Image (tube, rainbow, N blue to C red; front, side):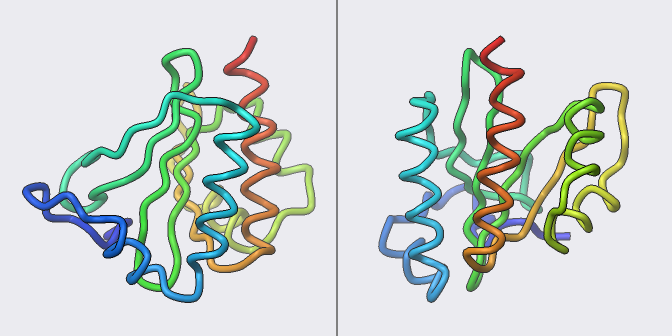
Length: 142
């Protein structure tokens, strides 16, 4: 299963390429980037992650721990959030959209939590991601 669009490690995509592949989802991408930068003031980098099935992503860290990685894809992007079992329990008790519920249901539960890869296609998905990041960031700041 391919997560991101840019999976050639030897070619770091230019901002114009990323904007082009995101298409109509570009405003949602830009809004989330702005929200993360202004709310969390994270360390940010653009990196090829986990091999050819994942590819290039914008990665945000708090106190050395992953907050989220955003993988551009064709017409959408995927947000990776590694949530602890306690965070997953909290999210499961909330009214979240279909993409978040599917990501939780399909993620393998490990003792340290679940690796969620959530497709973000519209503003409803964006609202879910910002809520997830708020929950997840609390544990990173502690």
